[in-house]
Image (cartoon, rainbow, N blue to C red):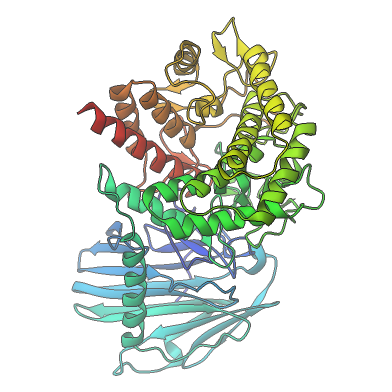
Length: 614
């Protein structure tokens, strides 16, 4: 049987996410896994067909070309079910990864269970790995037990889940020029499957349906028990639970670090060059996630993430522009050297394909406020900081005293040179304010006079230079008229009252310039060149920030309409990418933690406002 010819990848939104809390895979609605890295989120890919037609894939689909496909999650779990409706029968593909635990592991299991529920269905299976982003060749060994792919420093074992009455024969597998193909025919009630295992000593083995069912049940129980911790029972409950599961799926359990997304180089504009690697842990994302997880009742996850954050605060990153690097690998390493994969064409021709991230050594002053705000929030929710941590905070704020008043690259990691970004100064104010609160609440020793003086100086500078009388709005950076939706957090962090006339005027200006129906742009690249060619879509995080700002300003009905409209851009299983294109298509890395944590915050705030209104 010949392997199918390479096909264009499914659209970004036509995927669900599975994972084991150390790595993850994307599963398209046609049964194709076209993104999977191992052993970690930030490891080289094994299946990368999402970024190149020869980037590798693991496809299981009906042999016929005539079928309807549906996809859903087993409720309250990360187990993904893809249903195929054919002329001859109905079958399901159940994809999941048993949780890998809290110790870093080289070995991971990816289980694809097949079951026929009506009639008969024959599946075509194609396993075509491309190790190290397609840079390492491999060999294939086929045996009665299964098959083994071997590449430089990598092994991938394929085992078939068989019923005891199945005939074991190597003829069931076909070595098609180094790729593996398989044909599986099922009748109603039949259960079969394929298991992939990655580890330095992986070998194919005998696997029974009973073993797979046990792993399935254990995995389902893990996720259902985890979601069951949340006491939230308000509006949009299932959607918020799905966002929480998605954030959990993007958490690297051994360190507690949360990746911004499990993907790399998915474009912000189809055919453009804004294609970045998001498989790393940003200080900013982690800080915001602490709020979302605590508000949903996931205290342990928030504390663990806060521990990762405190660990980064306690160590000075080599070569970073300040005490903190803006992002780290999931293990806490700051080594994120950026390179391009010139042999890959990119998603729908969007090149260059970047891995690593050259923005890692930028100066972004906002991260200090976000980190201190998260530490303060944890402190208020039963996770106070100890003496060594307090000493480190004092050192960090002493550094900030001497360094806050300087140009920087800003929250959006622009590559057009440093500027006096208003948002960066805003979060410096937050850093000083939260440090002052921690010191006064707990009676900790601190140079309070110095911190208060600097906090007030930041406030006065923003009011003098961040406010543009011509626009009647706070602007992106000093001396300009460009608006920036990151400033939607001004009222949320307590810098300005949510109904202050200056703030309401800013909201109106943003609505006039950055809003497209219900969707919000970060800023206008044409008005504020960021050093990159092309444009981008609306930024989903910013839309949810806008919802929260509207609700805080008392415009609750408007906030709800914007929120409900935004929900229509979710994909079929409730996942959001980074951005929405002008045509409504999901673009950018997928799924994005920033979007899902902002969704949780916006929904909780809006739910509270609606309850008060009643």
